[in-house]
Length: 418
Image (cartoon, rainbow, N blue to C red):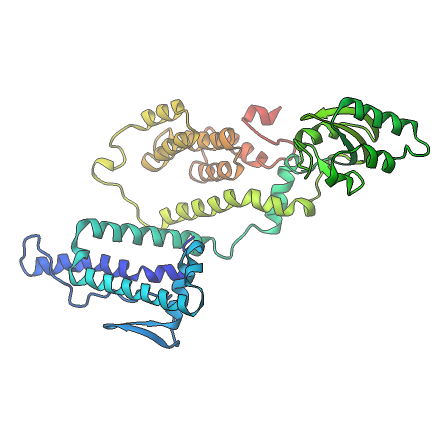
């Protein structure tokens, strides 16, 4: 994400873009043919800071440009973490200020040499301005301070309960030996029991793993495929032990080491409660939820702002609705398929294929990503704009059943009606 202050760092970019337009006005008003003159009120400040009122002291001045203590602090904050240590302490601050002065000199040189008139420079300025403002709209205009509600998180959890299970865990202890003979001897002593054959005596006499021996051979709690410190190939070890019953077990080998294991306790796999799964649910649903916020905004913005495609790109030019639909059906990539279906809806809203395209886009979202949010959006648009469609009944049925807990992964109307 772009930080807010970076928008102001790019004021030079914004001003330069505006300057280019004013240059064209100056050229046309003076009768010049393709020539550009310097805008009288060209603005390219500030170069540092965050655009807020700054009452901190001035620490350097380069021509008309003042650098404040606050500018120095914010500039340090902008640097990558790997560079910040270079500017620690009083001597580091002086070096950083020197670097800022050099940047001012470079920018002043660029302005004096009118490099903002260079087409490559102008293109970069315009691109960075566009990307900065687009990112600002997404991250600050739409997503800042917003997150799924408790009800939305709970709904997602209920609709995806099969994905949230507490893994089974096992608690065990072991005796590690170099040879099968030693391991079998340790195992037989434990089976025999009695004086001198209790766990601690056998462990201290037979185990070669000094690290686990210091904890009485206990390897703690682990799940299937879990990692245990101080045991070679511990993933294979935990896979082997996970399926064992409580009690003592015969020796088995893992990477040239023989183990005698006693399973002490087991807790079986079980469904997680909402409170246990909540943090993971929020993380799982956030990307799709944020994408839905952005796409919903684009849908509403397209309606509130006049969007008109002209010339060769006007609706009706290029491929017909039927041709686009055919290409969409043959597209192997789900995202590409949906892009083509969207073109039908936006370019040929009055065609017989517009409602088909929206319905198909919903089913593609389900088939490709099991994304009910995207599917719901397309179904809602279809029902709002084409209420008399022959597919309206199926669309309504599918929309009403997208979050049916009994239907974890709906793939088609037929699947839902079984």
